[in-house]
Figure 1 (tube, helix red, strand yellow):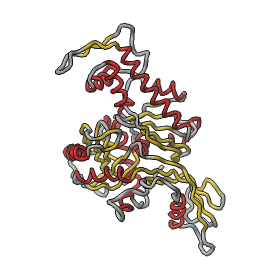
Figure 2 (tube, one colour):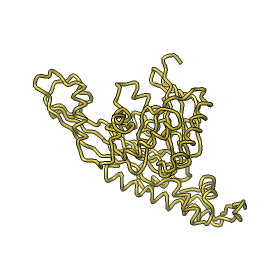
Figure 3 (cartoon, helix red, strand yellow):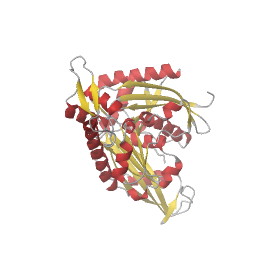
Figure 4 (tube, helix red, strand yellow):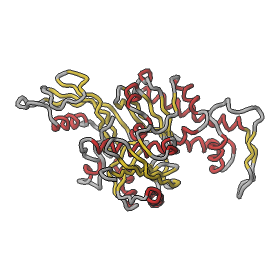
Length: 409
């Protein structure tokens, strides 16, 4: 592979665990080498609730990825999510000493530290501080102030934080599977790296990743992150509604949702039915397709309406020139695009991983892999730039390790 670097992106999801092994090339592209996957156990709403069981699943996923890629995995970059994660925008400001001839890296670090001098819950720690804008002596629109002359440096950041112990549990779980963790990445930030290109980030886009247990979202505008968040609602809630509404087992409800269900009320005819065959402990039954779709539509619309209210409280949807991008496993649900357009009243796209990668095309087109592929792209972009202090490096002086700063746009 020459000077190319192997990067492994790991997503411990509620339904599945994915490990994407890729080769980061010097020209900035990424080539997929192999993908490991295992049904997820011990994870609920994106968070580990059964530690030993999840460790086994992670170990199996990594072993599968090693076999398929013919690469021995020693370190990974991991996506994190969960309802405990929160974010806000804040401005930092510092005065430049009179005897300084120009703004340097130390000043950039100091203005970031100043922006993070805010009260967050005691049990939380910073995960990301993503630069939005710099200002030098009141001049806005400064992309890179390094080397400029000025007396006052200001900067706006999008700051993400979460419960320290929950984030540490992800790291510890992976280490128990006998690999090290390079860093952790907010899941929505990773998904955006796979789902959006440069132009879409500039025009403005909302990326919505609907997984099994949670829905991650992130908004870009003018190339920067405006807001992000996690909703503790996902595809499993739809499955539970089907199970309760039709009085069938969860496993049957999940299969029915995937193979026959639709979020569109127009995808059924009066009297159209689905036969569920009998099975061990299940007598079988006949399901009216319209009833199935009505249940799915109600939950999907509720989720999207809640998401819309949340995003509108933080950002303006009118600035999203590139519209909304749906990804994640639940984006495969029939009819979900039309419901999203009905709710948001702006264009919605089912966009898969972008093509700054090489390898099996099917992997790029699979929305279930958006986060894991995005982690790889994020890591490659970060490693290609200036070295950053990681969350793990920061916490190594306390209890284990955590990741303090990762910048990307």
